[in-house]
Image (cartoon, rainbow, N blue to C red; front, side, top):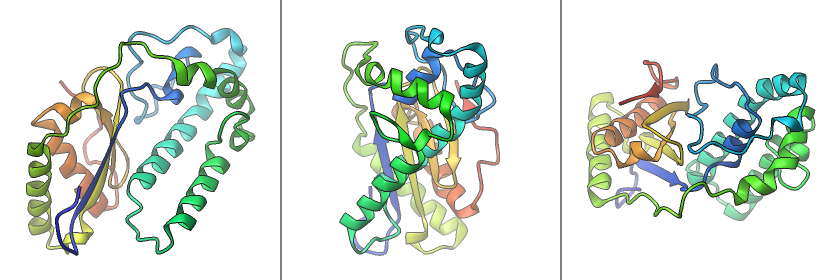
Length: 231
C-alpha cells in the first residue's frame, strides 16, 4: 500500500492461506525450534509424523539448521514483496533475487542451496512434494484487508512521520501473514514483521504491527519488547 504522489510511505502485506512448506518440514520431523523467536506455533491440525526419515542425531542437527533456513526464507519473501530500494532494471533485479534464493534457501527438487546442511537438505528433498500438497483444512478465503486497514495504515504512517521528524519515504515496512493458529507475531528484521493471519484481521493489533514495522525500520533494530503470542 502506498499514498498517492511521491515521495511517500509504503507498506507491503503478503499473505498465504496455505501452510508454509518450511513449517510442514519442521512439524513433520518434530524439530524443536522453540528457542527461535521467529518460529511460529505448530500447525493445527498437526502435520503427519515423518520423524522416521532421520535418525535422532540427524533430527537434532536439522533442528539446529532449520532457523537459519526459515529466517532467510522470510527475509527473501519480504524483499520480493517490496523491492523498494528502487531497482532500475526490475527483470535483472528479479533474476538476482531468484539466484540468491537458490543459493541460500534452495529450490526444488534438489535444494542445492542447503548443501552445507545435509540432514536438513535430505529431509526437505523428501518432504517438499507432500508439503506443497498438504491442505489441512478446506480452502479458506484470503484475509480481506479492508479499506479501514488501509486508512489505519495511513494514519499510523502520518503519526510516525510526525513523531520522528522523518521524510515520508523513510517510513516503510512489510507484514508477512502466515496460516498458523492463534494470534502470534515476531520481528524478522528491522521493518519486517511475520504474524498469524489472525493478527491482520484484528482491528486493534493490525495497526499496532504496522507501527512496529515502520518504527523498527527507523530504529534499525528489533522490537523493544519480546515478540510472541498475544491474546
